[in-house]
Picture 1 (cartoon, rainbow, N blue to C red):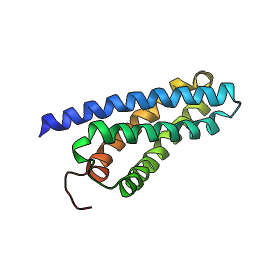
Picture 2: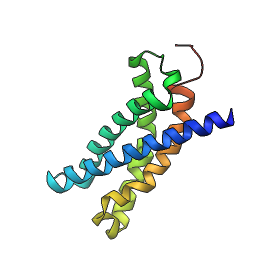
Picture 3: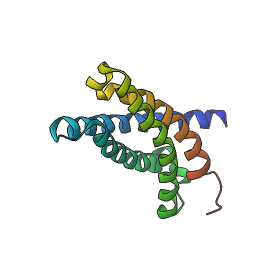
Picture 4: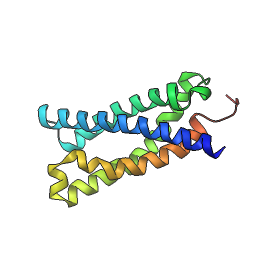
Length: 136
């Protein structure tokens, strides 16, 4: 059981790394190239990264549990992301507000909140979005 959980967490972390890349590249494009503020661009980048993470986790990390109907599963996933995004976005806002260096390097400012959100997400996604039962 522990080995399977570690394997899932490893896959989840790999998907989170891809989502992180999507997050910071989207943040860069929308803030630097398209002129959105850092906080506006962050909302766009978080949405895009979350969508990619759900799909990646559905087809890899939890492929053996992906039997749930997509609609209810997507709603559960969005609920989890919504909760963790409060921490993710809040930590980001604090970091860019308090550190002029971080405000000048927004992709670096994503990391603390993203790490916190990743841990919250794994726990909730493992137990609620992709549970190991067939109660749906």
